[in-house]
Image 1 (cartoon, one colour):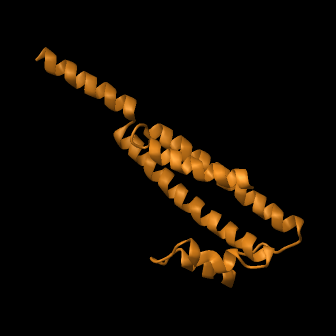
Image 2 (spheres, rainbow, N blue to C red; image 1 turned 90 degrees about the vertical axis):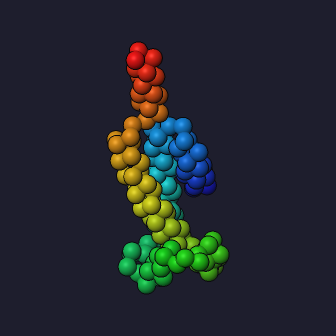
Image 3 (spheres, helix red, strand yellow; image 1 turned 120 degrees about the vertical axis):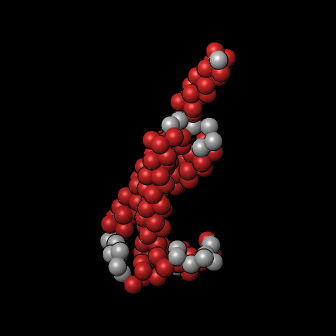
Length: 141
């Protein structure tokens, strides 16, 4: 669980750092991050199942409260502490599951935009090739 969470976070950071150099690398790393978070999601679902705890439905009142925190402008990690420090393993695990779902949704949106941008603008190799062609054409003229 810890490795999946850490790997997901690291791949998001690495993907964002690669964005200035290679959209292709950024897309790959964000995709890997998405896969790691899906692994984390399954781990937490297994955690609940093995302990006989309830997996909350996406429309459960507590889940709706947690989701609402994400819509606030003034939110931070501290906004979720009530849920993450709850003595109940069920509450903590379901909170993390909800947060992973929210993160996955945002990563899916980011991946769609990156892919659209890549299709419209191309990658760094394509841009460098076009720049070389333009330079050659200038020298010929």
